[in-house]
Image (cartoon, rainbow, N blue to C red; front, side, top):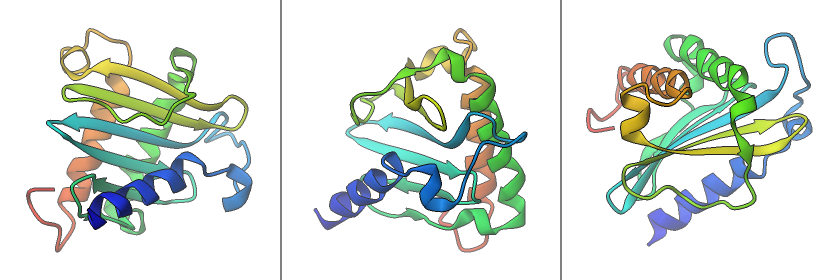
Length: 160
């Protein structure tokens, strides 16, 4: 139970993060998106990838555990920037996100934290993204490349 409360707290922090609170303003590199999440429904659990333009990158699980502070590693910085850039390219394909619902099994929630439109969401079946049947497949694959970079860090459990 404590793990789920910790997960919920971390997730709430990012979902309510305002750009000014971390000193972010629109830039050439990040004109629209200052943060993003890729949430994966896996059975009754959720895995959440978080990236913020200030360098924050984390990957954590509703069942407990995760990798916090991965963005401090050089091998993660490039894939983190690529993930935010992919979200920025596709920001027009996301809709306002009035809820904070987590994805069910087999679903992917792609969330963008934007400077001008608030929090945006696309909820897509994982199979459609994996088969490139949805235009957001680029964000999905870029997110998985980032997860792969995180998993290669020293002292990261191989099941992560």
